[in-house]
Image 1 (cartoon, helix red, strand yellow):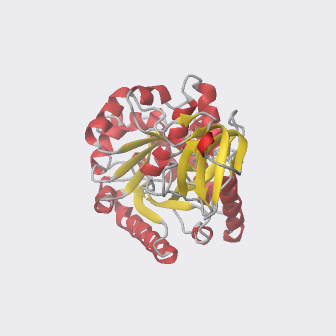
Image 2: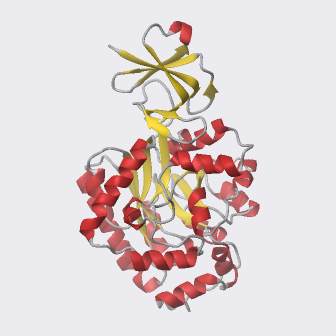
Image 3: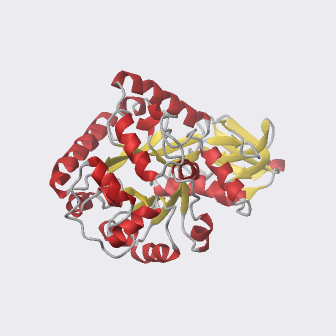
Length: 385
């Protein structure tokens, strides 16, 4: 069997950074064979300038919104962003597939090998059937008023069945809630039986108004419901933060990915760590800056030893679907965080969150995680294998 041998300035294994005297060895299919000292590697070692890394994991994306790049103003706040999404997302369906294809190609060229993708429609399915990337399809459901809970759940179940049937089991997935402010208690009851053994995800505390709404029924979400013509009289404030108001509905899930967390505090983090066996905190820093002009509490999450993963959100809220661009922005705002730690968020942590760690996320014998060359300045990435 012919082997491929890769050496670079640094080699990140998925768990730690190794110096340049180590060589990664794979077979021709990309299956990891070993990591050895250069003196034991033999001939035909390819040397690259940069960092060798396992393929990157985008734990939160909205691929189906790729046609909306540049359509929504920046820094307008979450409520106006939501209203813009709802009013502008409906393009002619024949214009959407090319945007999805182009966005997927961008992710592949950026070194991404797997995506946790939010799906409100089946628009992305034809592209996913080409099997260029691995996907965990989060079939998203929302419905704030209890009267529409059953209908919304049935629509999500129908989409889930279509994904399962047409992908022939090659793409994992689950039916998931959109956000605490868009899922009624009745809709939660429909959703909960589906969570066992699954990874689920939810947009969490992306704006301070989310907590205000659950604590006292006030804030900008009242305006959102008024604009949408939703009768909100059924809702009674819980007197608690949003995450402390809904988390009990998720505790039977295998993994929970909390996305954004821009306004999560230490009390909320402690509450989650106590109640959930396996929680992952997804940082989408460029989207947070795009929508709310706010930074996620990265140092607070690190202080509390939270398991962090990275996402890009959508091209409606980001200029790119590049995980390397997310890492660069994190490093820019939090320069003391070691690059090896951020790379762990982008590789093995994401693989575990999406239940893909048996194949992806680290350079371990028998895995096929992809081999990516990352520029040391986090300006670019290139898929080598």
